[in-house]
Length: 78
Image (cartoon, rainbow, N blue to C red; front, side, top):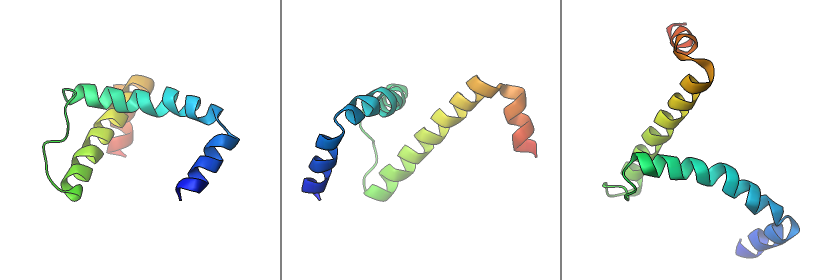
């Protein structure tokens, strides 16, 4: 598995720069909201739940910033 990952990375080294610009920004923002700490729960299931809620909150905040409150509320109401 690691050999395959290294082969793909070496074939497209610029992909890591793109990843840093997109994914790392989101992770840093979410971590900042959480107080730049680790998860305060134990177990993969609990941590996954906390991460999912943080990501949902991030996505909702971004959607409101892009589309506006009225548009989002209208979509939620159906």
